[in-house]
Length: 241
Image (cartoon, rainbow, N blue to C red; front, side):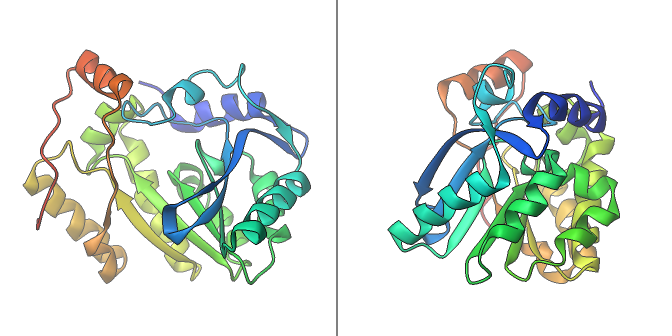
């Protein structure tokens, strides 16, 4: 197992160059009703179910560096051309390069919503990160919880189990700063009683978090292989738990 905060520092040195950050593609996407998307390179977790596993595991060999201005210009162009009103950074972990991300969000017109998809590790480890993000009125943060407990988090990400506490703390920090946010959960590997316990923990942070978003698990062949090699059993999707 590894410390996700230490890995974040290591990967950031690979995917950052001054204010620039590595990205591997820009695209329109159908999610959220239509959204302009920049897929970044580099993550501080190693989720066995990750759809971009081949990007996450070789940040040295993929993508090129873009300035915040270049990323903003490209995303705004896609959004205008497609008639979208939303923009996001996805693919890997957007929060690794803090300066780049904050400048990028600042460059997005306030009438366009910026959706930050994050594992929350860095926001949970440093409350000032959420405070800086609170200056953006057009920001929505989707915190993707990797499992439903410390143990499933560790099993699925290969990171130290305390990382799950950082994910929950990210939600606490965001709520404290009044930032529009919501949890999404990979719950396909957890029994009903564990899911219920998570609902109760989330409900204490903010009542509506009890009804978290169920994050879709796509069993690509390489995902299935990763899970089988690790001996992780897939549980049928939750229904009304």
